[in-house]
Amino acid sequence: RKGAELANSFKPDVIIALGGGSPMDAAKIMWVMYEHPETHFEELALRFMDIRKRIYKFPKMGVKAKMIAVTTTSGTGSEVTPFAVVTDDATGQKYPLADYALTPDMAIVDANLVMDMPKSLCAFGG
Image 1: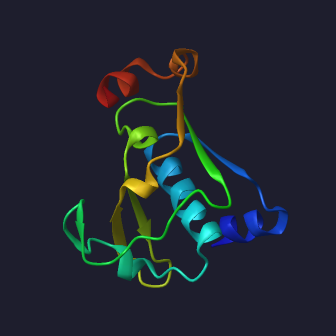
Image 2 (image 1 turned 60 degrees about the vertical axis):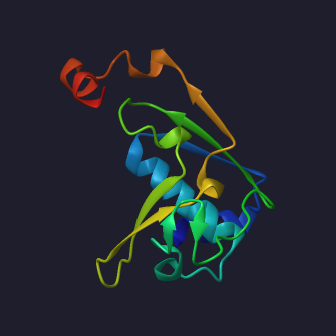
């Protein structure tokens, strides 16, 4: 929520996610909360039989800001996937979200960003 509050304070037209899977998920969630502050994640989580046949309509994304994902690790693919996981701070409940609207508008994959990673971490990630 703090990230969305910060975004609302200066109204960006681009949100840049930098990092691995968890930071990417956090940026996607902040993006949803910035674009649609009325969102209740328990309503969005897994409300579909498959990703194309939704029970609940996911809000339209990219109206206020575009999402650019810059990955610094390999493995999760979060920079190009329509998935994110949000955890409710009050209850500890995790809500998996899946909708094509969560796919970043652009992904930047720069091999130089992983050059200094420990070799084992790079190998485990893919």
